[in-house]
Length: 193
Length: 276
Image 1 (tube, helix red, strand yellow):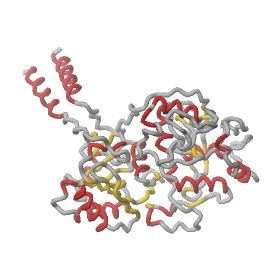
Image 2 (image 1 turned 90 degrees about the vertical axis):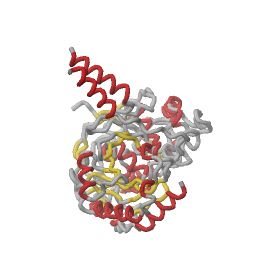
Image 3 (image 1 turned 90 degrees about the horizontal axis):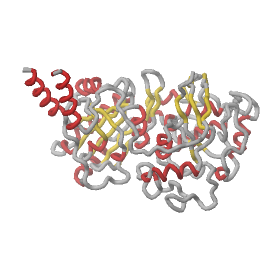
Image 4 (image 1 turned 180 degrees about the vertical axis):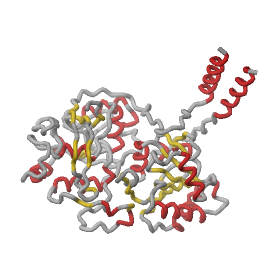
């Protein structure tokens, strides 16, 4: 019986481990965001690198879920952008929300946030890492942020579009982001890839 | 015994089948495996830290700087050559364009060759924030935070905080105005109160969080009218307008992007202190 449970456990252990994402065959473009080798966690608690998001057009925004001022607007913009992407393209797109408050925004917390906001379909990706990697990604996006109190951050509001190789296609800054413009860029990027 | 063997079997299986760490807890591990360690002999100075009033920040907010160690001088040409020798991906012909603009190590004639007339002991310039950070990681250090750097910058040669002294800002500005100052070797001038050299007289320096200043890119405008670009943008304003030297540094920092390289912009490294 004990051997049996060992066997069952072993099989479970085997199944629990996902095979690593296939490595991209062609060399990464030199300006690809996938050149960042930092480790991230998604809302399911899986560990991944940004390169694991390759192959899809990415719409990326950096926020924190406990934010009461600008972030809800940004989240609403992301949802609007998502709704304007044609359904036949949607599985070629990932909408990525990166937390700038990784201590609060645990995978569980992000998952809950996704559910509450109706962002739990598979095109939605929530990420967090440690402070250093978050800072590095912010610098790639030329996104400024600063912790101004234990619960608040000030930050610039930028939505970025990357092509499936991780090359930046466009950025929109400010709270008056033109969602149609971003959705059009996404459609073009999907078509061109 | 059976339990032990079960654990071993499981452990072995998970080792065999998992190529990636499966840790679920914070913090996510981010080691810099890709970087070869480089040795450095630069002396680090212990800075006990303390309360300090940042030039920018919430109104009259005091910031406490924790104790830390700071390189006594900027990173030199020679040291950066050692770094790129050990780390080919950071050579000028190999660096990813994500990490640097086109003028990285601009005056170096080749990957492993310093400029013909360059003093090996002059500070390295034309390095991006990414490159500076990679160097710091390769020597087991980090870049100083903006608050750490500015805390040390308050000192003159005899006091911890010389900000209110007449002439303190003017003297620094006179140093900033020297042409080609970046070509001089390090440690020829007088160190400050802490024994730290060359805070002002050779180069501008990267800080880890240079991009945390939320103003418009043109800080000469009296009113920050792009508040819509920032969450809580109105929390930022100058607190010490007489400190024009600091104003110049902050103006420069707000114009930088992490991939920029500049003729007289270098860096020095810092480290957390384990001493109390």
